[in-house]
Image (tube, rainbow, N blue to C red; front, side, top):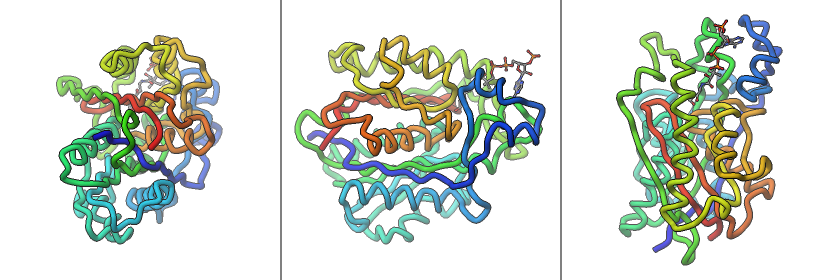
Length: 312
Ligand code: UT7
């Protein structure tokens, strides 16, 4: 059985925060942020909008795109590092709000790679025949865990949510290969500290990512006997434009063949990949039959990549 994405959706908070706005809070400047990270602005959710609200809206959009009713969903997986509360889970919250009464529900914890872990978990449940349709959401309200005393991290983060409906697709389409990995020994490089803030050793994570992203991307392509030049579109985790460009250049693909939401949305952790995917589908960058690669990494350290023949 071939398993793929039936539809993708996303939700973006309306409040735009520019680099100039951040300059008023910490000792930084637009030039540094743009050249070191590629970020021009980000979105912060209003106080009244939490991770479950963004997840819900992204899920509604994905269900609509997939033409699937909430009652048809068998399992909801929400990848997040910023749940409204540890329990009930965000997945249970949206199960109720969506009216997905037939769905089991759990949250997935793999930081920025969480959506990748969720997507591959969904694939397993469908392949075994246990479930037919799984809703996978990546959502984070990182503005809740920003340390405004730390200029090296506060400039990077933004809020948002993306979602996909996973199910059976026609032969030859869907998820063709994947790679998931973890290196717990690197946990100290990127974590939530005792005060609840995101803390990162930027240089170490950068070094790790700049090697891992291209390597995982090449691995999933080689697993299916294809070449780098066969990749039509790359959807990387949006952590830093320099890391993303390293992956893209190693693949030898053109700038316009890579989703780059980081400029406008910053780093959205679990939400980065599904948001970029949904936006790329909506604006026609990803077309039927395209070979696309999603690749992400983050706290854990954990990472994942997947090659998909787009379409149903
Ligand atoms: O999704 C989770 C995964 N996260 C990532 O992948 C992030 C990976 N790391 C990075 O993207 C980069 O390491 C950062 C963007 C976080 C930092 O960029 P960098 O080029 O590694 O800078 P750096 O940490 O080496 O700092 C260079 C300089 C330092 O000043 P000195 O010591 O050279 O005088 C910093 O104090 O830049 C300074 N600096 C800043 N200056 C202005 C650090 N943050 C800022 C800032 N504004 N916001």
